Length: 343
Image 1: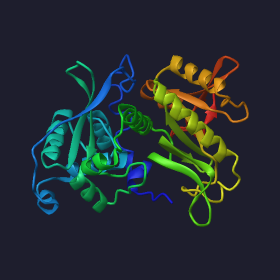
Image 2: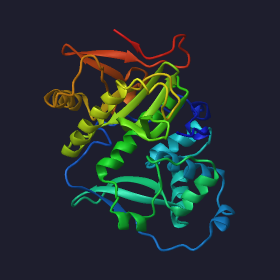
Image 3: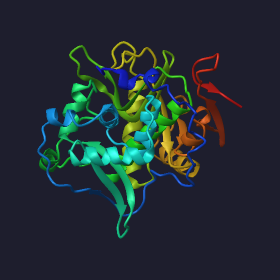
Image 4: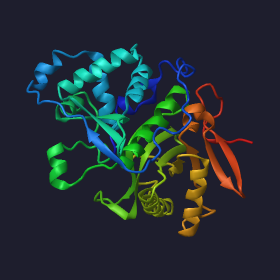
């Protein structure tokens, strides 16, 4: 059973909606699109021997909030950290945020990595927690589940469980969807990152393979739960999608889900596939058709990276008869709830 805390509660992130949307420029290309020859390069720092108790005396409320957000989210880049802090009501500037991130890195509370292409000097910087950050976040009430679980670097080496650039970009894109939905005032009760949907037996074991995990989840209300599956344009992305869709269909047609699921939801989740672009989503649709995984009776919705930056309320569509049928997400000032189809 998933445990929800204030760090999943949309009301906790209700500050500064639309206050700085116009200031942020919309990129020409998706920041989390896949590129050839990418690898993950960690930022190496000297060891630091301060205890957690000593560190807690040297950091402030905003520092703690940074740790909480990264822990809940698994991976965040600096812009996403900035956005979640602002949504929590903290007044912070980007240059000051960088200094705080560097301080937390020096204390070995968080870790900086970079996704780089071969031969490139620059890349995509992102952050995850280290052991001290995990202990701090746990004490602050952040809930860890299989999707955002912490593993030390030593343990990763022993088990060979290292996330790839594809894995990291899926999580970053999922956090982008959530943060922009919150910024745009989308009506929601809760959200989650890398959460599992499954049917359980009385003994807590998964029933009939009806289990899947998506990059982001947004519960609009008791009648609408959106499961965002982020797909990147490479071979591994399509392989993982095929397995995910098969599991999704098993869950949709398992009558026990509504009576026994991780979230105590009384509605089935709606899969929303987030591709890199419209062209990519068309490739995804063609791939699913080729794999006999496209079903008219089980609607799959789509979104794109940049749509979730421009206008989260109108970011979801369905492919039907070679046309895009748009759906509107409810905003807090709307009178009607639920995901509505628009012309």
